[in-house]
Image (tube, rainbow, N blue to C red; front, top):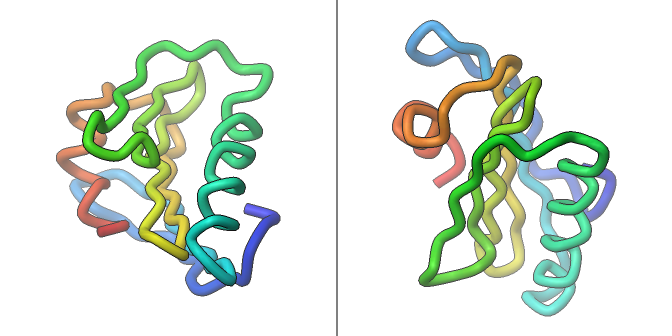
Length: 103
């Protein structure tokens, strides 16, 4: 992510899959909320969305499967966390394996 202050950037292997995990911080919740939607749009721009799942408790938590990868984007007040696979994985399976990496 180009926005925010980088807190974490690493590759993690789990259940035979490799994931990229990144966390960035913002000065306050308002700025992070604004950037959440900008980042979300940029990540899927130009790629057909095959499957997606939003959290209805907080619309700042989404898992998206594109034609070439799957990613989860989560806003945690002033921090935005991203976990991304290197191949498309069904959303439910991705959430089971990768979601704990950003919580």
